[in-house]
Amino acid sequence: MPFAFCHMAVMDHVFEFLDQLANAARQVVAQSRDVDFRYENKAAVGLDPVTQIDRGIETALRALISEAFPHDAIRGEEFGWTSEGARRIWSIDPIDGTRGFICGLPSWATLVGVIDDGDHVAGLIDLPVLGERLIATGGQTRRNGAPVAASSCRDLASARMATTDPFLFEGPEIDAFDRIRRATLVARYGLDALAYARVATGNLDLVIENGLKRHDLDALVAVVRGAGGTIGDWDGGEDWDRGRIIAAASRSLYDEAMALLSA
Image 1 (cartoon, rainbow, N blue to C red):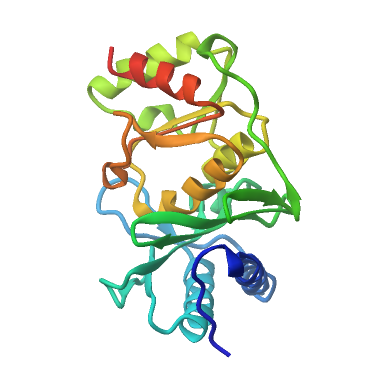
Image 2: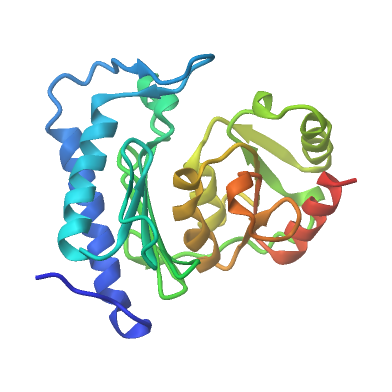
């Protein structure tokens, strides 16, 4: 039976529903007999791959969300909007890291973010190959049911930093990112949403990215914040539509990274 949520009293139901969505996504993958990483390229220039598994996952999640929350909007990477303009939005990235997926790498994830009247109130990062599921509800992030916390890192000099691909930065962003890279302790690449999961679990301290779409980032906001981290744009705000994101273990680390990016 459809249920609605408002405030903290029903956050456990939201947790259970996000868990259900993750299970449904995994089932689509498990039932795909022809997983040979065939893909179509959605981009006119470069590579933007999509597989039938992407589409199958999003179709399954849309059906479950529409049944449980018939008045809510859904925004997905593959099939766009339904009920645009509704107060509450379910944002879906069926396979975040499709490039990694088609290369047989384990870092891809299913992402679902819940935005209520502009606030990121819940999020899911499911990492099936790694056997990890991070769910943020009620201001707390849990991995496989256990609470997690961002690290205590407060400065760039001791920060473990990541970005998906340093070659995605353009123009002045190239120099800005290079300043960050030189200032941090170590840099790792190619992780997609896994990097944000690792900020939430305390294994990474900082992620710097550009060019993200809303389906790429909506799930990440609640997950990082629910672990005590800070996430925002390169200017210290929440202009998510520009897609330039800083996720940091602490506010002081976020502020230092923001200042260096704009130096």
